[in-house]
Every structure is written in structure tokens, then in C-alpha cells.
Amino acid sequence: MNKLLLALATIPLFTGCGPQNKENYTFFGGEIVNPTSDYVILYKDEKAVDSCKLDSDNRFQFKFDTLSDGLYSFEHAPEYQYVYLVDGDSLVLRLNTKDFDESLVFDGSGKQINNFLLDMFLEHERELPFVGASFRKDVDAFEKCMDSIRRPKIDHFNEMVKDAEMKEGALKLGLASIDYPLNLYKEKYPHKHKKYTGENVWDSLPKDFYAHRKSLAFDNHDLTYYKPYYDFVKYYIDNLSYASCLKGCSDDSNFKYEHYHFNVHKLNLVDSLVVDGDLRDNLFRSVATQYYINGKGVDAHSYDFLERFQALSANGNHKKEVADLFMALQNMQPGNPVPDLMVENFEGKQVALSNIAGKKDVVFYFWTATQPRHLGNISRKIAQLSEAYPDFEFVGISIRTESDQYKRNVESYGLDAKRNFRSLDYKKAVSTLIIDKLDKGIVVRDGRIDNAFASIHQPFKGQKY
Image (cartoon, rainbow, N blue to C red; front, top):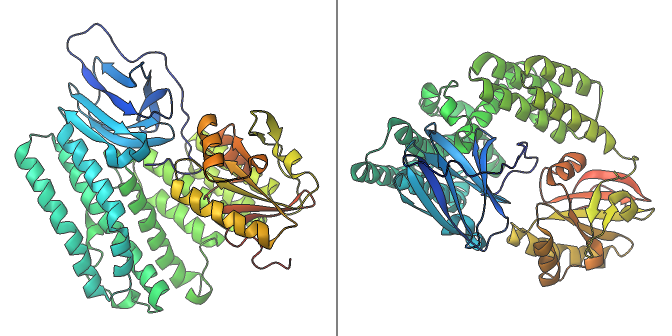
């Protein structure tokens, strides 16, 4: 699983891997084939608990005198995955980075819930095309499709419970891994159905269509950092805001998610509904980030929104982060110079992005080694664009990619080594250039920003070239 773009957690490195001379401890370790980093970092609630350097056999081990039961995550850059740990566990894993999630397997005490969570994650990825097709169906057929997804997962869960004794927290997390992705599909259904078919089904949904909302708790800290739960809550807040805003603020035909009043609705709903402090602050941050990224421009409302967000958020790091994003957004407006972000060229020398652009017409695009399918697609697309628009230079920036891997990718995918660079600081790159998705393109004319939010698939859409 890849970290999201615009990832926000800091990653401190520690020197140890826990106690070394104690008989009773919690153990978490394993082997990583084809490592892409020297370290494995263990997180709890986005905070680094400890880090361990791989030994000569590419193995790592964490040992803790005591450990709070719950959901953790481990990172072997640039990938990460969840792990559920119970105090006293002795859990081991093995994976191959060439197929990170699919090759990952757990063994030892605690293996059942962790292998189950991984199975649910992989099933979720595999079922997406089926779900996409289900959005086109009428509501009765859609609900039957959802039932067909849930039944075998519940059977799998019940088999696991029969074979292993697990604590209540693990059982609840196992059910959450089944239900929250399905609940998210139901929240999405009216919007997706209208998008694909043109039919508005909001007023004809069965009375119990949103029955899952009745059991939703906003004070369950154990799920706050679990992505299926968090994604569901975000979409649920969106839907409540949409319904509220549609009735009192806007005509549906002219409705846009970047509207100031819609996003203020979301802030206010989070303020009124969400109890858990971390979930509350994370949602405030998410709303603010999407408001500025989706809005792209800067107007009087932009300042009002920042003031409202700052008043509600209790997280100082989030406040600074959103303020920095707002400043970056201003810096990336048309007519401004290209930022002096330092990147590394193929020879290993550092150069500023502004110097690469110079006074030329340039389109910057982005790629990462962790998404080879995207890299293959983008390399073919750049070849087409370079032929269609010979007066532009198409310059690639690799993000979250180690130096050796970056060079191998440039060569193996036939990219122009003189026009491909590597970001030195992932977080700084995505925050400075506002890289919210890999298909982003930045169009530069005469050395100045023309469109910082273009799609690389249609970089000149809506413009006269």
C-alpha cells in the first residue's frame, strides 16, 4: 500500500529496536526480500514508535517490554501496511518489495487477524471493477451486488474466529475491514449512479438504505487511523453537507464541491458531530486541504476559510500545514516564477527547478517507482506529447524514489535522462508544487507558471496553443 500524496506524518529515525535482554517481551520482526530502504519504521497513530535497520540478511526485529494492544502500521519506504499487535505477541512477516502486498504473509501469534486484514485489503482492490459496474445498476440490483461481496467475507471471518482466540479489539477491527468499505460504496452510490446514468435516485432510495449510519460512532479512537473507516467518515460528511447545502444554498445543476459555503458546511458538521480529538482534527485538515486544492485559485473567501479552519482546529502542526498550503497555492498562481525547488539530475548533481525551466516553455510531469503501471503509461504519453508539441520540453520529476531505482527506471522505460530528475525531499516537493495526484502537469511558458493544475493527459485543455 502506498502512502498518499500530500502525506503529512513526520518520520523520525531512532537508533534502537527495543530491549535486547528480556525474556518476556512483544516481538515483531521479519524478512524483506529486495529491500528498497535500509529501515523499517513502526507507527502508532501516525507517530513513529521505533525504527530498525535491516541486518545483512535483510531482517529486522522490534522488541518491547510492554506494548498497547491495537492497530499499528509499518513502513518500508516507500510502502506501508497495517499490523495489529497485542502485548506479548511474537509476530513475524515475510514480503518481497517487487509485489509488496500480494507477497506479504504473517506467522506466529497474531497471524490470524493480520492475514485476515491483509486478505480484506487485497479483496477490496480486486472487487473495485465489479463495484464500478454495480454503480450503474438500479438500487435493488446494487444492494444485491453488495450482499454478494459481503457474504463470503463474513464466512471467512467466522472461520477465522472458530480457529483462533482473539481479543475483542481484533474482532471489531476484522468486522470493520468488511463493513466500512461496503458502507463507503453505499454512500457513493447515488453520486456515481447519476454520473454514469444521468438518473437522480436520491429521493427514491429505500428507507433503510443508509441503515449503516445508525451504528456509526465518532468516538472510536481505535479506528481513527484505519483508512477504510476514515474514508467512509469523510464521504459521509460530504454527503451530509451536500444534502444540507443542496436544500439551503445551491441549485444542483450549478453545484460545485469547491464552493466556499459547502466546505464551511463540512467544517461545521465535523465540529458538531465528531468527538474523538484526532479524528476531529484530521477531518478538519482534510476538508481544508481539499478546499484549497480543488479551488486552485485564491479569492477573498480563501482568507475567510483559513480563519475559520484555524479557529476550529486544535492541532498546531495541521494549522501550519494548511497555512503553508495556502501560501504554496498563492505561489503557484499563473504568472508567478517556477519555485526554486532543488532536485537531482541523472549525474547526481542538484539543480533548481527554476533553472530547469529557465525562459523556456516546459511541462513538468511526475512519476514514482512504486507505481510501474502508471510509469509505463506516462512514458508512452510523454512520447506522444513530445511529438505533438515539439516547442515544449516535457520534464519528469520522480518522487519518493531512491537514486539507484530512479536511474534504473529512466533507462528501462526509455525516458530522456537529460529531462528527468529526482526529488530530494518528498514532503517538500508535494507541498511546494501541490502534487495531489500523479497525473498532474505544470505548464510553464517563458519560464513562468501558466497552469499549475493541468492534467498531463490534456495539459493544454481549454487553452489556445
